[in-house]
Amino acid sequence: MKVKIHCFEGEWDRQRPDLSVKPFIKLLEQICDSAGHHLLFTYKYCQSIDRLSEELKLDGRTLANKSFQHCLYFAFHGDGNNLWSTAGDSCISFEEIANLLGQKAADSIIFFGSCGTKASSLSLQNLKAKTNARLVVGYSSTVGWLESSMFEMLFFNELYYYQRMGAFVNKMRKVASQELFAKLKIHLV
Image (cartoon, rainbow, N blue to C red; front, side, top):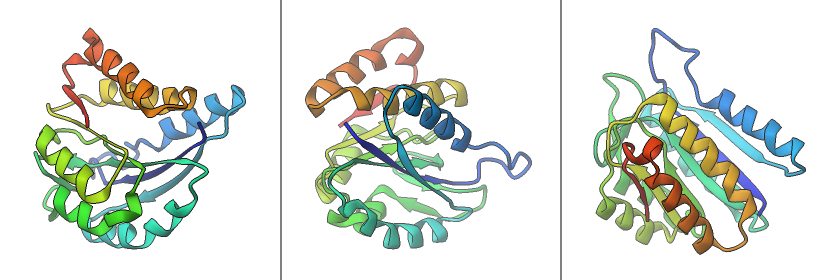
């Protein structure tokens, strides 16, 4: 499956501006290229939720190319049903994200790789229904940087090897239940 990841990343820590998911996406790109796959990705650094909102309003037009499995990857802080970029920043709810994306996200994968998102299955189901996304993924526990990054890298890498979404989701559910990842409490909706 040809995959295109659209990464939107907030600022994790003002004291550590180098902390980012971008290096792991670049590593994944190199791994995929060496295996004969071509990973495409876009990367948007969003220091504020206002910036994320603007990017979501604009970015939908790139999802029109159906020759790829598009993945919207949100790397932000979270608290249940909201994301925020930095401490003291305003937040954006999953419902607001769904409204901004609308049907532009139809048939895409939406992945909330957010520390502490604590996403409920119901909130992810609602977002999936509003956007007509193919799959929505989120964590329902406070997650560690290393464990979540490992799962996310494995998730995006494995996506290449499947032609049917159902088989891919079943594989990821098995992976998510393994001891290393079970504490992340991963929801695949």
